[in-house]
Image (cartoon, rainbow, N blue to C red; front, side, top):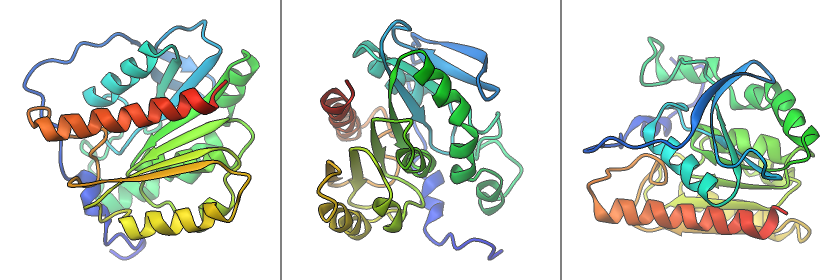
Length: 245
C-alpha cells in the first residue's frame, strides 16, 4: 500500500473528540447548494462577509466543527460548512486511509467547489476560508484563486512549501508543536517563503503542548485542550476581522 506516501497521516485520525454533554447547534443543514452540496449553515445570511469552513477528515457532521461554525457565525459572518465528502467520512468508511485520501483529493475538491464560491461572490459577499487538516490543503488551493480574500489554516494536511509560492491572499497558519503531519519545521519553511513575498500578509503560530487536530478535535473535558482550541479560534477570528472587509 504505497500509492501515496502517508507516513505521517495516521495522526489525522488520532485524538478523537470526547463529548460528555450534547452540543447545541444554532445552524441548520441545507441541501442543493451550488455545486450540489449539502452544508451546515449558520450566522446571519444577510452578512456581506461569508466564511467557508473546510473540515478535517471527520466531515461536516462533527459536533465540534459545527460548534466552531456557530461561534464564527456569532461574530457576524455567514458561515457555510459544506459536506465535501458526501457522507463518506474517514471514520465511517470501509476504505483504508490511503484509499480514502485518494478518493477525496482536496485539490479536486477545491476545483469542484468553485460554483459555490462563485454563487457567494455573486451575492455580494466577501469570502474567507478556514481549513482544518484535510481542509487546510483545500483552503490553500482556494487561496490560489480570486474567489477568496483571506484564509486561515489549522494543523493542515499535505500543504507544501510550493503552495506558499502561489497563494494570492493573506494567510494565517496555526500549527502544533507535536504535529507529525505538518511539523513546526515545515511551518517555518512556509514562513521563509512568505517572508520573501512582501505583498502577501501572513501570520504563523506554533501552539505548544498539542498535536494534530488540536483546534477542532480535542478532549472537551481537558481544560488545557479546550483553552488552546479557543485560543486558536480567537486567532482565526482576529485574522478574518483584519482582512475580510
